[in-house]
Length: 216
Image (cartoon, rainbow, N blue to C red):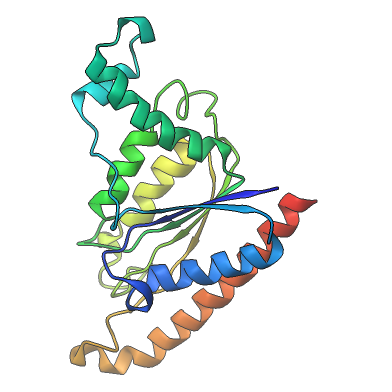
């Protein structure tokens, strides 16, 4: 049986969130292929993980016998998140752009699972695991657009997920999500609708392709 680790981080609920909606389409397609499989879902907006502390960070570089009770407790919380990542056959992450970057809750999750010598370093423990990121954004930051230089979501996640954790990274990017609600962007609504439709199709196709590949 396969396991999908599904991370949501949007502060908006349900269909009000593009990243949640597209991720839900991915998950539905995945579950259709793996009705007996397991989905581990972490909603970081509803149940945030602890931000990294000195105790949680330092415990990763101290022998278990030398840890204080505080360090042991803090590190146990990190290990739970790390093991979820290591045990997943595929990872799905909803990463909406908040003020040109990722939500702080998602950053906290990354800080917890990033452990040099285990998940990061020469032989990352989850290396090769496919991860699909739904990187929604209210505008467009594609190459050639006026705000191209404000693209800090994909660049950051490529550095952490792909180059540091060794994951097999793929992006699905629903953009211009503010167009239906912002009168100043009304002329961009058709582009938003096309982007949204494309994102749903890509999510479904990607989930099906991954499911078949992992089942082979």
